[in-house]
Length: 88
Image (cartoon, helix red, strand yellow):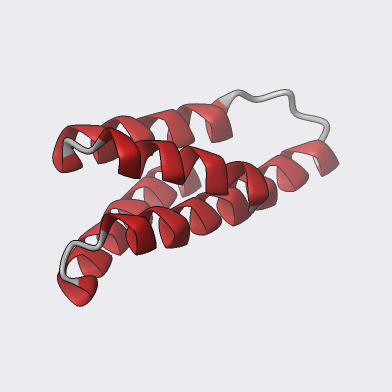
């Protein structure tokens, strides 16, 4: 359930940033990437404590990234988001 909420929050963040920044792909890619990195880190640490080897955090991240590339049609934004996810 929490992964579904994280997918919804990630999509909502993308829409809000698209509207707020005037579709500035560099800024959006950085902000979304940092958000994704923090969310992934949170879910991985949560699942590590419970000794669960679930792939759900990775599947949720892949779903959000697939939706992002589908909606934005921008490879540069996708690459920035992936790079900043590793940083976050």
